[in-house]
Length: 318
Image (cartoon, rainbow, N blue to C red; front, side):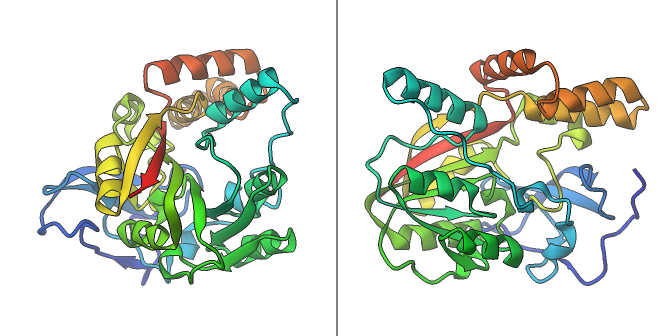
């Protein structure tokens, strides 16, 4: 996939570590946009103070939209189609929890109240939460996706979560599925969410694991690197440290039981090396178009050894 040597002009900025550390970074890697092929090469650095990894330079808040093409999957009208309700009873609830574990959308076991989803896209997950008895709010950067979510009856703010006004009632649960890594100011966002939450509220986030073995082995082909859309790259330590610094105590950290990220990354590696048939097979498995049982079993195996490539964290408001 051909790429130019520099990003579109006028949309890059250097930004300090959001944790307020003294200046000083080490180069980790350089990569292009493997998934969508948007032009540019981007460097990823690690803060010498706290160890947080970030993309620098990065697209500015005003220019980041250039890196989200029409084909960007979460913005599709059918993105995050809610899982069908589970059958009643203990077995049904267990099946639902297992499905959420596989999808990386497992939430704490709470009495329904007020939920706020950051990066809610078109509102599919909020549909499901409303069906379970929650009062639903969201924040979404894409005007089109936010409009679709509002049309489905959810109270959605269009714009950055760092700048959003308080929702009309205290929030009992904040969720964000693969979204923290996209934020320009994650510390400010987490503090903002803390201020809007009720005493004892919880948050639940899924996020790529920069410490995964797959990332170190596959390098630029690791799809969860996803520069320049991913502005910050967390591992378990830097994630829990940032949560603690913004008033959230981690109560659980688990791995989604999925092989999607590993299989997709291997598919991109095979494609780059010209192995057309192997690439097509791997990407079909990643997209759940074939070998579904193998995909599922591999997902649980990867989760068991902490190597599915992503994390789900639950944290309680202090």
